Image 1 (cartoon, helix red, strand yellow):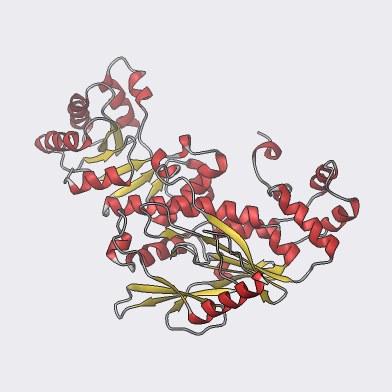
Image 2 (cartoon, helix red, strand yellow):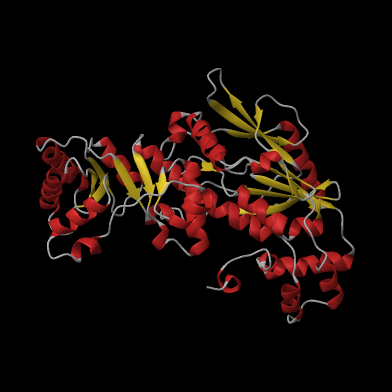
Length: 453
């Protein structure tokens, strides 16, 4: 497998951009425009039934900024395109990102129009990373949010990511496991993600293993002998008969080998779980757990939990991995300041707030979030400021290297601080309050008047 053809690497990441980013870059260069710019990344509106978004993907976005450059091979390719002049490509050979980045830490709940990340750099440095920053923040925030919803629905029961095989490509398959882990998902079936990120890996067996044997019970015996504590998939033929055969194997192999769980993958999971639980308990195996999978999402998990189904863990795959009910976010990366002046966009439905910004989260005496205020970056308002400086002059600072476990712990804490109706997987009757400060409103009005002149 060639890295060149299958993966983004430090040698080709400079080309991971839209063509117009490079044509604008050349136009800025031709015009001698090198002033400092501010670009803000935010999501314009929350998808249906999403009461918050869980910020993720910052680590990969910063890694891309550190690596972003143009190798000889990349420049040779650009030279074949008609848009680019040789002198510009010579300048591009020395291009590096040397700006500052301010961002909300991974694992922080955010809301519509709140800045997730801001880049402060000369305009030619700030413009180019638009595509890769949006790409990394968008997908991981999208699926981390979906994962957090599944975890909330499970109410403390274990959740395992089964999504790799149907997720859209290699990179998404790896990054989704990371985002799910931040969101509180316990483990992944994705072995490479386990290796890369240190995420716990988990798995059971496929129906093909059972099918390969002439008798279901022989498949169970072979697997249980080899893997003490394993989970047996019992629904290949007749689910309840499969449970009885699992009990028979458990009796045969005890105490040398034990069965940790049975897995239900189809049918009426609530009814089958109750009947399976009765079989296991009556046979004297209350310790054997029940694991459920099969096209689940947060709504189905919540329904099973609310119905009291005796299910101990869930395997959730496609619906979580592709965020099936909300497969994209209206994410944007917009110029909000250039040359010391606020910049604005007034397009219907796409207005932006000018300048550098900060978000203050106000909390009550018990630490529960009450409301957010989007403000100018230099305001000093009540509440906890959310954006931190994570990169200076193109180099990551300690807050930009906080790590996966810290992001996971942060997500658990910060989600718990949200009002209960905002944590819910149903649409909140009242959205979480987000205000714009008086100073930022006044600045927006002033910039808008100038823009219309």
